[in-house]
Length: 71
Image (cartoon, rainbow, N blue to C red; front, side, top):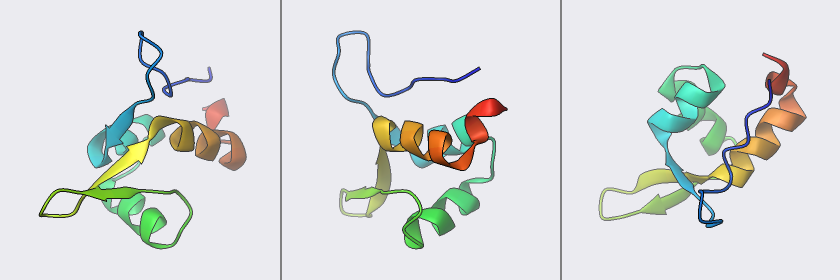
């Protein structure tokens, strides 16, 4: 079952936390960090601490390209 996480009910684009992305992809958060550092999935740094946020449409694209959507 493919999961579309890109849009909120009001049609706005969503930003996801590292943990949300890890849960969606069913991997450890460190894997998501490593993939973001390696350029496999795009992330945005926010705040003073540099927390990562991921655009939901990028997560959807990653799922489609990696074949993980078939899980």
